[in-house]
Image (cartoon, rainbow, N blue to C red; front, side, top):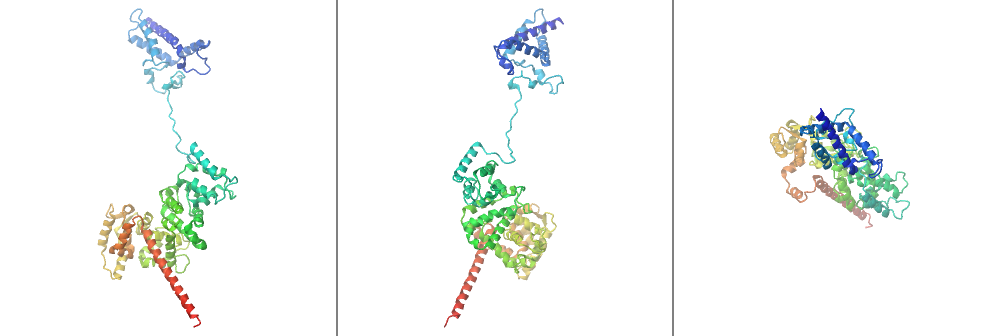
Length: 552
């Protein structure tokens, strides 16, 4: 007992000596601002109080006990005056920052391994002002990576944009009119010029006819439009305020601007009714290719996945609108509209089964036409039951003439999938080929057994399971169009069997063209020649009439 008391007294003396030695390193205590600076008269009293407080802490008591145990283990107190070695060692350890007793920290290696859930009477050691800054837990600051309204522009980008805005709005203190604003749309916003009308309307909400500098900065910079990608910019400009999708009506201002200002469509200004039909056809083609979800809505994801933005830029840069094959070609519109007009014999802008069976010189079978008008593959937009409207016909002709596209594959797959289970069985294929075989016999063609045709179809598509075909199988194959033509389009089936060398060479020379592009070009040439022939015959008739009216 006397040895333990002597050891404790020695430890206390050592701690006192250590405190005196640490008096010169006051900055290690991390004192609050209200503590006097080193050298002030009141500093020693403050240090004494702090030292007394530290000695009273539970951690300090545990530390003293730990040191006593170490002193006993090292043989301190085994003799009469054996406390001197421990007293000489302790201050040097604290001054040098030894591993056993870190400087100015009440924790020891043994105590640091204690569980974090201490008693209610203990204080939080990590929050102690006496703990060194390096030992405190450093919180990692994760920068914000999601912004609901878009990432704010950097200072440099904002400064650069404001400089361009000042340059474009110079001399127009009252604002820019819509024609003057076209330069802002192209040069600053980097959007096609025919977005001017809809962008102007988004900013000029009061319909004043002017867009001021401050209003443009508020819309383009302060709402973070400048940092968005082009697809998000287009989507935000076109959509309605409360919508998270685009509708067909949202594209009308853009197409109206295109019709009014594109040099390749200037000739249509004399026929407003065909301007409207052209705009409708372009919108229908856009939704046919991009609107995979259906329902007449176009989402931002669908817009980003499609090629509409490239087509918009191409249409803005190209003066010949017929070279813009994606969506905007006038020749493509001409072919679609004339084909519809040929089938719509009563010109009520509706087509029934008997009209559609005549398409392509009676190329389609009755069974596939019945399947189309059952509206199982796709619901008609026409309000009249059993009748196909113009939008439905646009969807049909695009699917019929380019069966390699994904929308077309989905359309015809649903047509042949009679039970709607997502697979095409051999019985379903045979159901459609029976009529095809009957038509071949009526035309004195050599009949082909279904078993042979089935082997040809399996070799053509290469399905994962030879007992059925899935939509995934058609996605991987470039010959899906021929697959469906064999089942229900006799003319294309016979052309495929004949292997026209002219068509094969044409496909090799122009691999970038789709089946629809080639069909539209052929049909436009044919229709143009027919129209020229009619004009020539009418002109010759006029000349003949004049000769009859001559005096001799």
